Image (cartoon, rainbow, N blue to C red):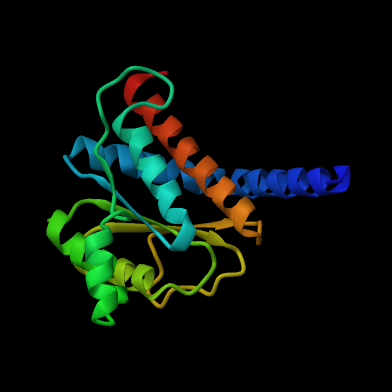
Length: 190
């Protein structure tokens, strides 16, 4: 253990916050689109690659329950936790269909799909973003700056500065909670 390790981690976390701050106008625009979507009966659907699945679940729960105040639920759903479907698709070599099959089941268009990426190429996330477009959903991604672009560019793209898995997870959770905070503020005047 060393103070240098602590200092390095704090620097990386600050760099993440600064990166999101530089994208604040686009983040506010995205939050406004999310408010419009909620007001029109749409939902926020979250997907994530690898270990960020838990972050997607937590962010969805912040919208469903509360972040800072008692309020009505906001319709958000994480598509990351169907283990039976994941196992069945893996057995058949179709892991890239994990999110697509769920999307086709839960959306009739007019929703927003937010993909959290850990920087690794994830065929499931890529396929889901393409399918969401075809299903008339707005798309957004949050990924490390170094990640290659998707074939079909999302409507909103947010870049993270950190490259290490722990900092990517922290920055993704911060982004999700900040998004919820912006939406709560707009809808409920807090």
